[in-house]
Length: 212
Image (cartoon, rainbow, N blue to C red; front, side, top):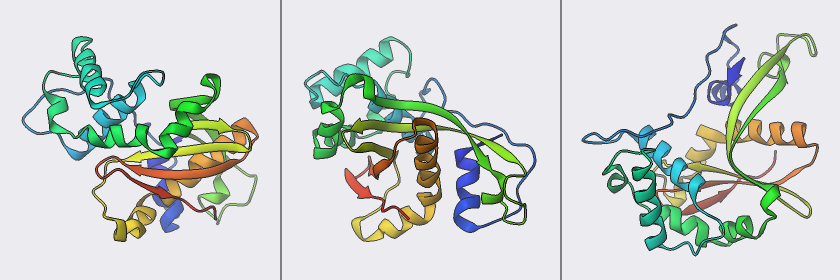
């Protein structure tokens, strides 16, 4: 068994040094207060807030601040940690054309923080192994997914600080990961992923990922 974050490097680099035993990674359920959050902790906090937004609400900055206060009251996050991130990136997503498409989707056909497990032929990880000889179970969490008339739309949030002219860095880091997400959706739901995107919460930039 493996997590997507472990396999994405193998898929991107072509490394065949694959361990036989894997550990699962998971997002922490709470974000604890301290002097300064790490980049990973800021990403976790942003993912949490993005997933808790009420899609029937009038999503404004005032709403997001109220939501943050509610998450603090329910002890999902410690008091004061939201001040260490920018909520503008959250607001920008839900006010964007892509965010509006998510909101317009049928409620029973849109998902946020969707866990999955899918079997992957080990040959795709290590070409030295014959096809069909062994399967690897891959576990991951899809940030945002919804269905439109002609297929599924997949969005993966990233908190990396990347400028518009540096999108190649985004692809170098995460193209293997989002390819695995697409594969998982299409294998499990038996329908195509018609579009996939990275959304950069730090800048509000949307990057479309072209199918390979």
